[in-house]
Length: 315
Image 1 (cartoon, rainbow, N blue to C red):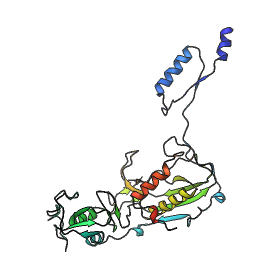
Image 2 (cartoon, rainbow, N blue to C red):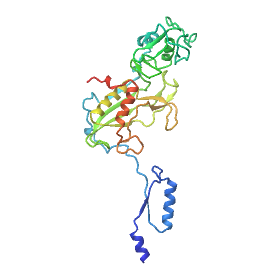
Image 3 (cartoon, one colour):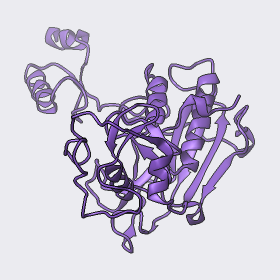
Image 4 (cartoon, one colour):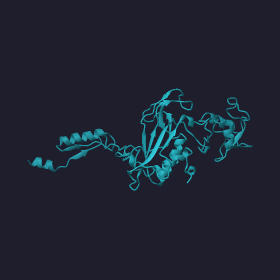
């Protein structure tokens, strides 16, 4: 009887981490439970918490437009694909000719700048002699003009250039995002870490389709997994500025692209394009939620790297 009373006074010890998401390995947790049972100690088995991906149910009447942001929806269609511009004209627009080239490598063809371009005989363009060298206007990096034409022809041909050395963008960079819809509104719930603000919810929806010439395998089908995708920002001044930039990135077809999924390995599918989003509403168990004090600054940096900076916003 005394033994029974002693057992009753021993608290049940939780053995967590059965799913392997915490600091204790699942096998160790299981062994601990077996040993505790053998010693006559009570064991309470608990599973790791699940991520909270979505907010509580919301009535449509509770969804409000985002203050200071026009509209609630953006659509992109195939017609939005810009026609390619003359490669020589694009290169000339963003460069100035260098009369006396320095004796260093052109980092595109790896030939010396004082020599002819490595693309001599491969590309022939009127008025674009293989020995001509140009300096990009903002960053000052130098390349053979013919090499810049070759680089442009190998890209999206959208009228923009990106310096291969420092990644400075000249013109308006556009991407290869397939047609779809972006919606955004305010919902009456708070994100972890932002108790004083409501939440901006962004909903992206892209259907499966057929790849076109700008995609990896033109004419082949592409899949679109996990749509509609819900993403979240705090409804404060910074969150609204980021939303405006994300709308701009969407219009320029930069949010998604077609490629190989880094999580599933599936090819020919719609994937994120280097602009991270928070898809976990009420927790941060997957790393895609809040609180994350660095996220807003990080996504601003990622947008800027795509040529979508705060200097694009007209106040």
